Image (cartoon, rainbow, N blue to C red; front, top):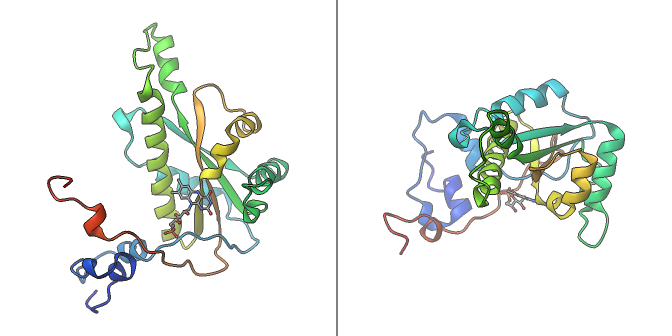
Length: 214
Ligand SMILES: Cc1cc2nc3c(=O)[nH]c(=O)nc-3n(C[C@H](O)[C@H](O)[C@H](O)COP(=O)(O)O)c2cc1C
């Protein structure tokens, strides 16, 4: 972009004035620079096959040691979806807008597969420490991020939902999550009913470090 006010200045402030796109940059990049979460949707739902495509794209993202310790649950059974919506919307920490979003997905960390492979091969699972949670949670977050980028590139609106963690026991029961599979984040999505707002970020001088932290 050649105009003096790049989307990066709007986002990060004046110290991002040197950050620009080349003239032949893919449009995905300018879309990413201007992206924002959406919390108001048209009532129609995104087709299941579109969701499957987005899941496939999300699961093309990097995954630690190719262990693929993340799963995505597409929730479209009406009674299940409304029970989860109520869980997220009710109570003092409830978010009312989640009561009836068109589409809802849950991104889970899954350390179960790795444990099962060890059992099948009759091997002791040596990494039964923070890694079992950390690697699976990071894998799930990376898949969530890739899904967000792909969905927004398709013109869909999305908003990640950490509130699922407040209800992890109830959610695990509703979704029949086995041991060592845990919800990392939900994703509310649909066709946007309004354009996303650009929210500012801390200046790059605060969050991007060069060689050393200080
Ligand atoms: C892991 C994660 C959990 C989030 N949980 C919620 C949530 O429960 N409710 C909500 O309204 N937004 C949630 N958000 C959206 C953030 O509030 C949003 O990304 C942030 O305010 C920046 O805005 P932007 O996405 O429009 O740039 C979450 C985002 C992430 C990455």
